[in-house]
Amino acid sequence: MGVFDLFKKKPEQPPGGAGQGSAPGAEPKAGAADAAAPKQGLFGMLRSALKKTTDVLNTDIRDLFKREGRLVDDEFLAELFAILVKTDMGAGPAGRIRDRIGADFRARVVHMQDVLASVKDEVRKILQQPEQPIQLAASGPTVVLVVGVNGSGKTTSIAKLANRFRTEGKKVVLGAGDTFRAAAVEQLTIWADRLGVEIVKTGQGGDPAAVAHKAVATALESQADVCIIDTAGRLQTQTNLMQQLEKVHRVISKLIPDAPHETLLVLDATAGQNALSQAQGFSTAAKCTGIILSKLDGSAKGGVIIPIRERFAIPVKFVGLGEQAADLAVFNADEFVEALFAEPPPK
Image (tube, rainbow, N blue to C red; front, side):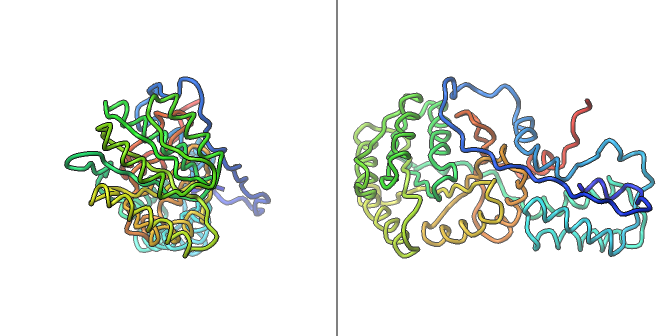
């Protein structure tokens, strides 16, 4: 059942089935013509990427204007809460929205547009932030450290960032610092070749800090504009993770005192509530300055961005909207909310 089912007349007999979930999407693969610019505008890309989440919210939207509205009572509010939680926005934000609807409309018969306006307003308040693209260094290379667990879409997100800078005319150097996973180095090398950017790497099991140091040194020597450094996606303990990241910070800052200028955490939208625990683990250890929400197009759990913004003082800088290198957009709260609750196009 979706949000819009709440406005249907209740049948005499209770409905029997529950809504179906959506399978998580696969991590994007490097492919030919990935650097081509997307044909749709940003809103269209967001709308397409959020389709699975929107479908959870907007089931049976064609029936909206055939019903007489719905009384806002405890039963209605409980159903609304359950539907919102299903998008993985979590009990906190879902409860906040439910309470807002209760305060605004309790004991009134309302129509979909009345309630939807309040829901959108509350979600927008939680997500609101200024657009925050990468903060570039005043002079010399801008160093961007990218962190996240294995399988989060970290390597592909790095490629998308590199493509974004490259299309802006900037010279980019990549550092393949996830040395504990051979596939990560191989995949980043493929992307570097396709995008035409330089990459610094070492053998499997090499010292990630040494790779980071060499990548920054290479960026300085070649007068590159941006240096993007991958990091290990899995270490045995939180202590090991913190020690490794502190070492990377230390060696980078010896070359450029203010570096890294950005530390971006990649979170997988298909992970749902697990993304929250990842954000908790990395936000302290990595001193994150921003989040990239990846695989948004493969998830019915796009609502997870809401508790992330509510619980962590870390801005969402980018969202991954597809499989091509160009499918990365600066996060805009207003456009995200409008796309999340967009009505499906007529068939």
